[in-house]
Amino acid sequence: MSNFLKLAKERYSVRSYKGTPVEQDKIDTLLEAARVAPTACNNQPWRIKILTDADDLAFIDRITPYRFGAPLVFMIAYDSAASWKNPLCEGVDSGYVDASIAITHMMLQAADLGLGTLWVGYFDIADFCEHFKLPETIVPVALLPVGYPADDVKPNPLHDKSLDIGQLII
Ligand SMILES: Cc1cc2nc3c(=O)[nH]c(=O)nc-3n(C[C@H](O)[C@H](O)[C@H](O)COP(=O)(O)O)c2cc1C
Image (tube, rainbow, N blue to C red):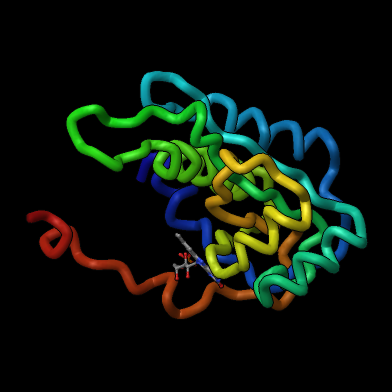
């Protein structure tokens, strides 16, 4: 199996974290993984907020139940003033896709560093934008709690429920 496929299969959603802070050099590496992600027309519309302060983490716990004690949460968004719009398909904004690729890079890079992550879509986006007074063009895509997995953490059974190749080809 290729090294990449091994990493991709080993990554799983971590839903319990140690409180140990994530080192700055590892945070920098995760941001670098996001920075090199491909984007439509290379517009690079992703924008990332880094949350580690106790007050900010307490706020996250008020808008979602899915932090699970992670000491670091990224909020990955795109700037709709910068993202590419497909002129052939009205209403198709590539920002969401661009941000999603960057998040995926970050998750896999984190796994390679021995860190756990959880893609969190279940949070109140309007509350987040209002709390941090984000400009109107910033569209949050996900929260990404990051940290060292708790000793007893295991993948959820959903992790192993993947379609067969034959089911995903149309
Ligand atoms: C777009 C998206 C949104 C998600 N939102 C949540 C969420 O709000 N809470 C949660 O616990 N997991 C969330 N997940 C994680 C998925 O449940 C998880 O990736 C899936 O069950 C496969 O498990 P695995 O990541 O362990 O392989 C989300 C994943 C994606 C891709």
